[in-house]
Amino acid sequence: MDQIGLVNSIFRAAANIDVGRKGFAIRGKEQEGRISYEKGIIAALSAFEEAQITVDPQTLILAEYTFLSQELQFCGETDKDTLSSLTQAIQSFDDAFLALQAVEESGYKTADKAFPHRGTYRISGFPKDSFHIACIAHKTRLRNILRAPGIDSIEKTLLKQRFANMTAAQGGYIKKQKKALAI
Image 1 (cartoon, rainbow, N blue to C red):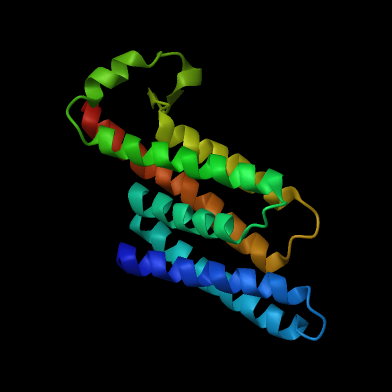
Image 2 (cartoon, helix red, strand yellow):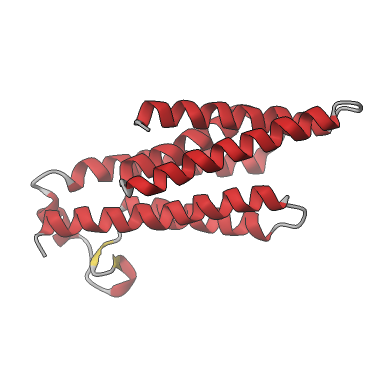
């Protein structure tokens, strides 16, 4: 699936999940809500699995960015904590997209010199730049959601896939760093 198709699939899946969640709260609409919710989760899981197969860091974070953007759009204005978390995640991925551009440029070798060489500033010996920071922060966010009580098992499957995608994105990004730094 191309990136536009992937984005469209995730966009529709997130919308179905939201409609489903809202349907749970309406008396007499619980069954319709459950169907929409499960349809959305299954579609999102399929899209995230397809993204993981690409092992392309840009495709992987684009998938996550799209999902987060949809969640932000559907989030209630009174849910300040979720709004803040989603906004921070999206901003982190904005920075990650910039790092993806930078790693493709010849100046990345110079940028490497600006990062301390102590382990806390490195991932597998490469700079822990905004791409890695975004992935690490998002994995923490997903891990915290997974620990929350009451998460439906089908949604846990989706969360675990999204977590795996962040690990795959970092692996693909490290390959780009290795190429850029010719190590």
